[in-house]
Image (cartoon, rainbow, N blue to C red; front, side, top):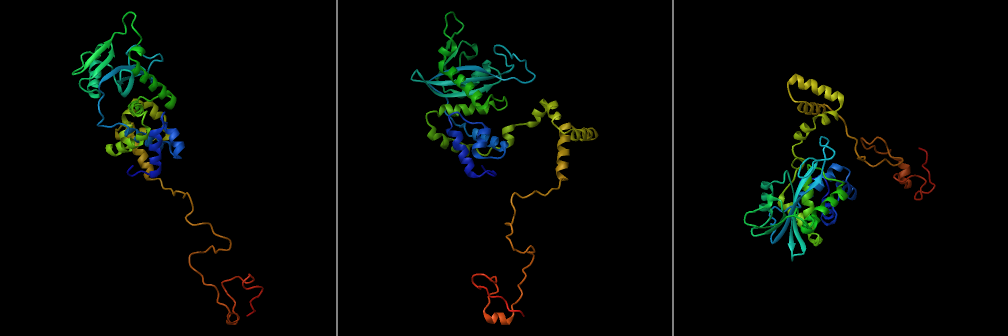
Length: 347
């Protein structure tokens, strides 16, 4: 919150709403509830609070842990409409989940993470980072889970004859996947691939504290102090890489006259078009002189009868000595209730 332009009251109100709302809320909802004029400010505020939902020193899962992977649909413009099949990454985001089983029947804490590919190296790293030594891990028959170091492993062959479905054998981890997909579609109407890790951490935060809403706000504020300041650049990442991937799309949004000047400038100086656009924009801002209209006047509006010329104080004309001797008050209007109907005598 250091250096923020938002009132401190709105920060605490936003932290309370985000931490205690069971389903979470989008930046558009938070903007309406807090009365923030800019959607970008509400989005940045919400993402900064989401950064405070992960404890860097959190305890690993222990005991009996169910683990599996799933796919969340996501399609780019360059991907086929049908998407890839099986474990293909085309049009999908691969998530790995793990949940503790308490008293053999109830779900405890959980972890959820996006991975690039569900191979042995990635899954074994996930097991090592999120589970304690001696943990019993229950998975399906996928060979990448076999022989985890210093952990017990129990595999269920779901492809065997008369085998039970996966959502029955691995009940709670599949319940988590189902709730996550329903939550993502209901609250955010789908997730963007770039920030899916942040949404996974938010879901984990809400799931692990679904029975203790009274401590969520304290945890959120405490972790916010622990992780330190978060900047816009650290959230959006390297925007230049995104520009290169969507080159035609970005250039299509530029004003044609500015793009023409940028192409000429880039050709003359032998530089990239994006660098030329940045230089031209900075040059335009340097030579733009304008006076911002104030939101409210510096002085209150003049009342009826006030002098328009306020550069210097003008003393009133002195009264005649004869009028002063009669006791007339020069600062009270003649004819008022105090002076009555008396009039000045002609001089």
